[in-house]
Each structure stands twice: as C-alpha cells, then as structure tokens.
Image (cartoon, rainbow, N blue to C red; front, side, top):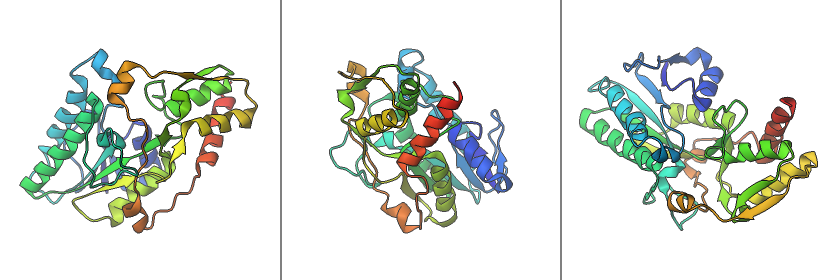
Length: 278
C-alpha cells in the first residue's frame, strides 16, 4: 500500500483515483505514514507567494516535510518525493538532465530544491530509501488552481474559448515540456515499481513544445477570433522564470514508459472540457 500525502491536489487526487486499491490517503493534519511506501505531493504551486506571504513556501515545502520525515527515522520506508522542473532554474543546457546543476531563483523553486537536498541528507543519515520525481508542466481536466500564475497553458486556452485576446510573453517564442496528468500518474507508479532507489528521475514528455504553436493550434480547433498579442515579460517574471525548458527523460523511457496522450490530443480534451462549461 502507498501512503499518499497531498492526495486532494490536482495530481495527487488523479493518482489516487487511478490507483484506488493501492493507496491510503493521509489526512491533511496527519504526519505519520500508514505503510512503508510513501508518495509525497504536498507543496505550494507557484513563485508568487513572495508578494503576499514570505513564510508559506517555507512552511509548506519544508516545515511540513520535516514533520513527516520525523516519523520515518530508522524505518523500512521508501520515500517518493514529487518535485518540479523548476528546481533546474535558468540553464542554457537543454534538455535538462537529472545530473545538471540546479540554480532556482523563485521562493517556490528554491524551497523545492532545498526540500530535495534535505530529504537526501535525512535519508542518508537514517538509512531511509528515497526517489525524487521532477515533473515537467502537467496539464489536464480537474486542475482547480489554473491561473495566469500557474498552468498558464490552460488559463490561456480558457481565454481562447471565451474569444478573448491573450497576451503572450515574447510572443510565445519559448519552449516547455507538457505532459498530460494521466501519463504523469502512470509514470510515477512505474517509477515506484521499477526505478532504482536513491535516485532522481525526470518525468515529462521529453519533447520541446513552442508555446505559440500550441496557442495557434487551439485557435484553429475552435476557429477562435482571439488575437495573440506580444508583450514584454514583467521584471519579476524575468527574475524567477526560465525562458526555455524541456527534460531529458532517458531514465524514464529506459523503465519502459510510453506516453499515451499526445499534446494535440490533450489540448483537444481541455478545449472540449472548457467548451462544455459554457
């Protein structure tokens, strides 16, 4: 059985649904695992908390993690930690490989990388096994946290469905690695079943997608009149965000992972969902 922390979030809830017979959802305020296999999703979701709450990324991404790890000392536990591509930070080397130097800039990104490092140190100290999963950009129906700060892809698709003009930083001429949420959940389960212990694994499509191309595809699918407007990124965006990113998924593919939902098919699903809400 898998003790799932953060099982009510976007990806966590989907994982629990797809693996309903194998999971124990840990209550929000509980810290002690109910099995020797832990999957940890608890996290903030973007770099913008710095404007409203300087402490929340530390409390959520580090303090709660330490409280959970305190119940894992010297036990036969495998701790599977869900991280993010954001930990790589600004890099000119693409695709990003698990062994590359990490240089995160925003509070979310920095605390996610710090959590990785503290987890590794803890596990080495107390003889606990771990795996770290660095996720690419995850999209799919059911994400209730979509905004212009988080999951901009779906936020802008919704704007296109509404026929609104949309602003694209640098005209959308940046690259991202997108992977559908069901594929992410399948990849996580595969890694938990087959990946080496004490390792870091990128989970993504491994394919570079230019953001502008995806927006134009969505426009064409619904014959939208939305205009794509080129704007300069904000100063904060320049400070914390990465222009181009996609992941080296060699490790994941060597485990036998095969992506089921192509980006076009995933976009079609999102468009259909948003149009049905109108």
